[in-house]
Length: 314
Image (cartoon, rainbow, N blue to C red; front, side, top):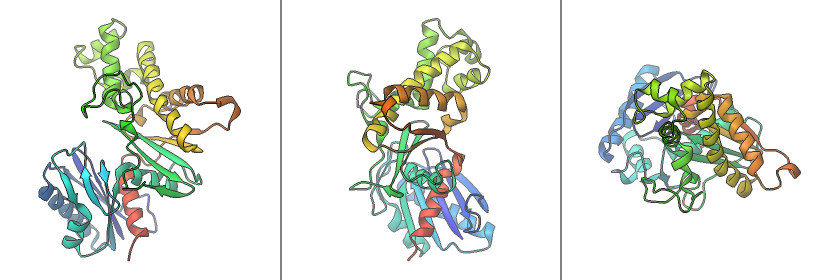
């Protein structure tokens, strides 16, 4: 049996996974993320030990997925979600605590691996996963293999510039993709529409323009509200700019839309697909890339981490 962890900005999610049925966790545990290196390692160990107690077994190996710059050595150099934790050697620290194999990777990379094996991209060999959440993360499976890059940092596509004169992001960069295509970006587009007087239903639902969030757009899209659909279409356009860039560079056969925003469902996925096919160079002369929703939900990163741990035992 194997363990997979997903380390996010607010939670540590742990799954116990059996090789006989990797998609269905045997046990699940969660705890809050602590913005301190030593405390974060301790919370991971606590979750792992708790899962072993729940399952009555010792895990053969442990995998960890973390949002941010994760070196191929398992060193977390920087995470925008846990910004005080720098240069944390997660792999070494966990191996010292647990005395067993540990694999550490970027969370979107781990999610891409899970979706390519057991999710929406089963059978595809050239896959780009785009996780739309608080930020934008990506993971790539190219010719059936994970692509990590020179340092292991491949996939930080949310930080590529799509508007050089765009507003400044929290990272200090101007006009990065995730400024527009994240959950934060969706809420911002909705507030801008409401300020223009074009989204009164959102103002009514939220109580004020300042209180409008992406969740309000989600609810109103589900109700078929025309102004919400217009805001979502603008959001899909910005999302598709980045997706089209990935298509130009990587030529994937499939793009999997993951992250919290995928819960919006078909209107989001079809909107991104429509705009992507308009924006891709020579769109009518090439095979159309498939754009599909992820299937493994919020467990994808932890599941992918467990799969990587299972494959890298030694």
